[in-house]
Length: 118
Image 1 (spheres, helix red, strand yellow):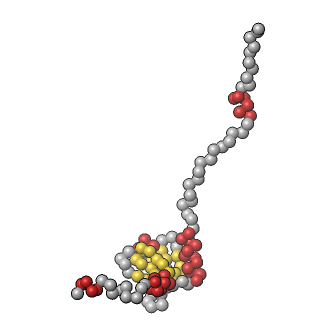
Image 2: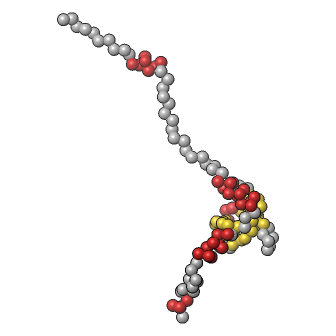
Image 3: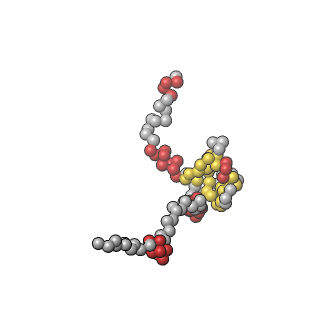
């Protein structure tokens, strides 16, 4: 018997000819989703009555006429129109939410704690 030499192809040469599969890193979510812009534009177009609660618990009622990166302009029926810096707003919601919450209350629920104080 003779010694046979096994001939193996050089895998490095084969791989060099093929394009490598690029592993892509998962992209981070975008910083700007435009959700705020969409919400403001929708409320402005419908002139939705809004309630704006400030950091000092003051409630302002009106509709949003204008907004930008740092402020919103609130038009009001009773009182002057206001330019409110966004950093002073705790939250805002549709005035309609107050009416919905009022209907959900059960009768007699408002005076429950008064009997104990006497």
